[in-house]
Image 1 (cartoon, rainbow, N blue to C red):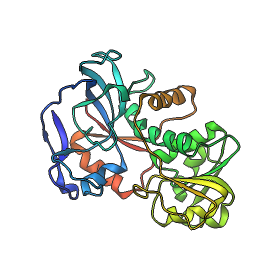
Image 2 (cartoon, rainbow, N blue to C red):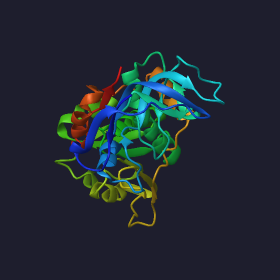
Image 3 (cartoon, one colour):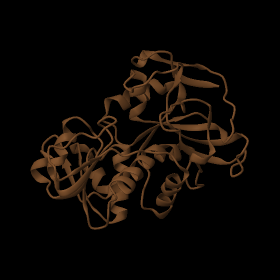
Length: 307
């Protein structure tokens, strides 16, 4: 199968495009012929060696996908060859920038007919992360106010729409060129982070969902009311420690399961969540997509088309 992989950590020049062995399904697994794979911020960080652990090379990049089942292992009775599915690889595992994937059947969901493979891949990991963060970790409720940092990104854009569907008041940050886009997603207030210090204009939030990292993360505690909580996905394995004792810092566990993927499909079917702007690349052009992703000023999603 064709794949994009690394044999050592490094920059864009560490990427290889070539042939690797096809996978076979183990017990409880399926093999998926990949039609589309999403590009996420984690991918270039894996390439650069920013995650802990002892790697086994070669490493195929990528975490979420959409495709068609082409093989079924023992013990799998709820999916069959020919089923269209989408999903996210097991936590801590990469490997979707390739033509075939072996994955546990229990964490894969059927792709809705209303979504193309490219569209399903575009919202798999961002949707899973937003749901685990906003619903499962922050436990956001109707009537609450939430600040979502970096609203134009894939995860944050999904989170804005999810929060509005829940019934919360949503404040978000973005560049001036993206403010209309953020309002279109449903944000009640969109702040230009280049010209306005969000800590001066935002107060008494019940929750913060932080997707940017750096000093934005630590300064986000200032906008919380006493008893408020903040969830962080861009500050490493641990949430930053607040200087205040009256707020809670949380690091969402983005665990894989079929149910949140089905939740993504249901939200789209209801019209609660719309698709982000999607830019499509071929698998052989993955380096170009990763270059854009690494620049971190993307609106929407980048997706690799494999078939």
